[in-house]
Length: 332
Image (cartoon, rainbow, N blue to C red; front, side, top):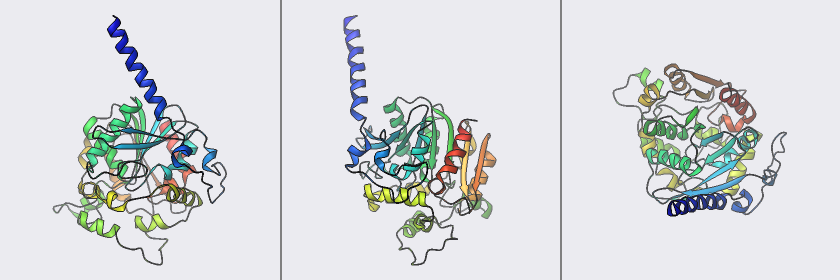
């Protein structure tokens, strides 16, 4: 019995030590405080106001160190950011939701504070990263919210590993397919949300300079990302810009794979948990979100109006409404 007892004790000791080692205050990781430009009721004035905010890390099975932001306690609520996004942009959402959940935001590889790497830049590997985050945290049941490309990562996770760890899922404004198949009808293209003829065309568009005058009525998500038309969004974007140094070339590596996927089979056949879908009138993805809602049993569709900041960045531009709607869905 002694060898067995000793082995168990060693495992428990290593597990406890690992848990303690990764609990790192955000200020310690970032090395500086940040004062938000807009002082807004119900939100922190400075980063240091979020005294329990942590930025922790783990190493994937293929040797990449990934960071994740963590705040609050209770049932885990795991956010998977979109392409090029990171935990810093979720600072308002985390602050509000941490009163009710253990909020976790993963910086995906080549994004945010996570490692830059030339390999593993496929949605399936990103889904494996999410699974390994779960394993690292010991999470067996959680709420998940994927925004933009993060929704694709969540669909890939469900495709590969099923939904047994998912209590409820939230998809925010991600088309079913970005690139249309040659044999699709116009209706199929619209229902998929396919906007470009090829991944190359998408990448070319991402690399183009913005016009000098930004049209506030556009549905172009690139332009809408530059419209600082919400003080909440301006706060989170300025914070992210101050602490995150993006590498555009590294981030683009996943885009070919991301743009080439069609998730309609997963959405139609493999989603067997309650789902909420968020989009808005300023988004080009409304038709595809309606199609998802029509084929996913037990799903809810939220379409924000233009006055409600209903675009691709709705959760950051209108965080109090989004978190209120999100909690209403999760706790129903």
